[in-house]
Length: 160
Ligand SMILES: [Zn+2]
Image (cartoon, rainbow, N blue to C red; front, side, top):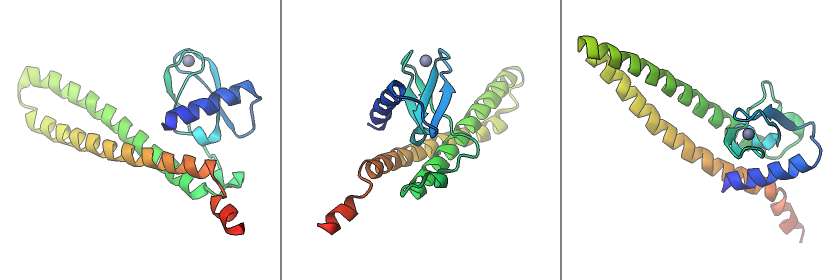
């Protein structure tokens, strides 16, 4: 659901002009130049040109607090969660490489099985953690989007 909303936003943004707060990057699949609203940082979206699912980069040193948002805290948590997820994914791919190396070695020696088992266990644990983080992230995206869509719902009702 989150992806659909982000994607809609992307189309709208592409039709209008690029804003200062947009994240501009190239699609890794077709090199099409994409401009995504900053709130899409760290989220999955679909390339408007080739339709591939791409990860919107989080700009280095991005100052969310400069943007005068009520949702700053939510966004910070969102970005931190996304970064953790990214770190976990990198670690998983490193472990997969290591495991492949260990497997190759094992075929020759049959002796590396204990080290391999430990790493396999770590990979298994990381996969479980990643699933938890993904779920948490998805619910935070939902919360962030609903907050962004209805920024002053409480104020509006209390005035009336
Ligand atoms: Zn593309």
